[in-house]
Image 1 (cartoon, rainbow over the protein chains, first blue to last red):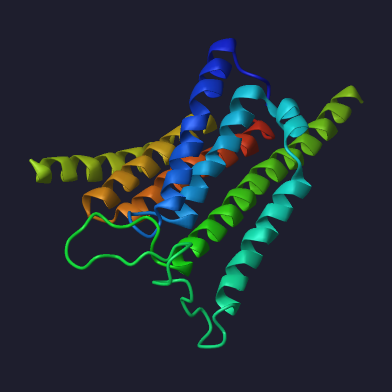
Image 2 (image 1 turned 60 degrees about the vertical axis):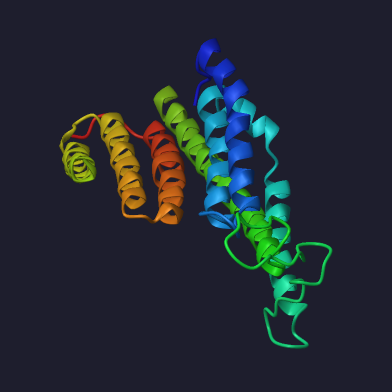
Length: 162
Length: 80
C-alpha cells in the first residue's frame, strides 16, 4: 500500500493515539462497563490498520516486529493460564485476589454505586491478559496479510517484466 | 420515535447489504459492507447489547474492512 497524502498522515498521527487510549479504557474498565479484553483489544488493533493505510506498508514493516507481537501474545495467554492455575488450591480459576486488599482487591460497598475500579480480583487481570493477547494477535493478522500480498505483488511484477 | 430510528436502521442494513452484492466495483462493495457492519453495530446498541456492539464495530467495521482492502490490493479491481 502506498502512503497517502500529508493531510491523511497528519490526521493519523494526531488521532490514532486517541483510539489506543479508548481501547485501553475499554480493557481496563472491562469488569465495570460494557466491553472487555476482546472488544478493547480489537479497538487497539485498529491502530495497526490505521498506520498501514496512512503511512504505507513499507514504513509499517520497518516499524513493527513480528517476534515482539508473538511474545506479547504468548505472554497474555500465559498470564491468563497463570491466573487460573494460582487458585488451584481451592478450585481452577478461583478468584484468589478478591476482597483481600491490594491489587484488584477492594471491597465494593453494598447498594447502588458507580463501581470500584480496583475490585473484582482476577477478572480484571484476565481482562488485561486477553487484551494483550487480542491486540498482538489481530495486529499479527494484519501484518502477515500485508506481507502475503506483497509477495503476490512482487511475483506479479516479475511476470510483467517477462 | 425510537421505532422510527429502529426501522430506519433495519432498512439501511438491508439496503447496504443489497448494494454490497450489487456494485461491480469491489472497493465500493467493501465500503458498503463496512456500512452494513456499522448499522448492525447500531442495531445491537438499540437492542441493548452494547458489549456486542463494540465488538462488531471494532472487528466488522474496522479490522475486516482493512483486511478486505489489503486483499483487494492484490487482485484486479473490477469483477468480471
